[in-house]
Image (cartoon, rainbow, N blue to C red; front, side, top):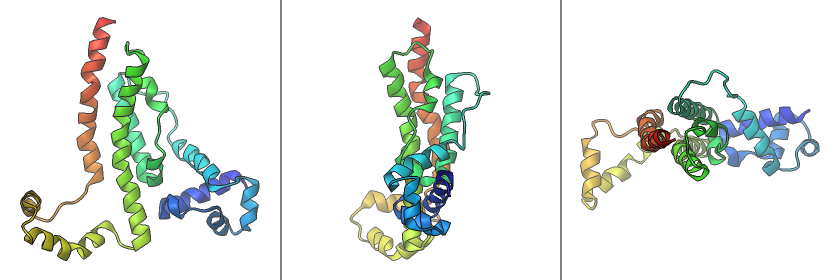
Length: 210
């Protein structure tokens, strides 16, 4: 028994069933030990979760060979963060606010502007990743995948379309040949360029005057 084993087991439970399904008692059962024995290492679930986050974020350590240029480094950080959210959907509710800051440093930005841009760059990634956690939680609680759930709701959606009460919704839905898939990876790729384009002019303008 060790804190590291408890953390690894807790991560496995959260990955499979969601953070809401995690408990110290459940982790102890998975480890095959008495529930009280885990309290020697961590007093509560609230104390356990930061250890889990540290371990999960530690799977992608700082890279000494980070690319040149703030935009390339932000893009790398975004993709790294997205891959971690993909592996551990529960991380989306915790977020990461510290490690990528260095990519924006040294470009003449005042501290407030620097941090504002940092938050605006990474918040959409985290926000999109919340859907990963929602999907994982829903599948764990219902036993249905997203496609299975949507299939089960097809009659209700068809009734909504045929009601005529929502003309724009009806028009958009009718335009899809095979329905709409929430392709989160594609949405991440689609949005990343737009997210990076926004602050580019601010950074470049500030670099020009410093």
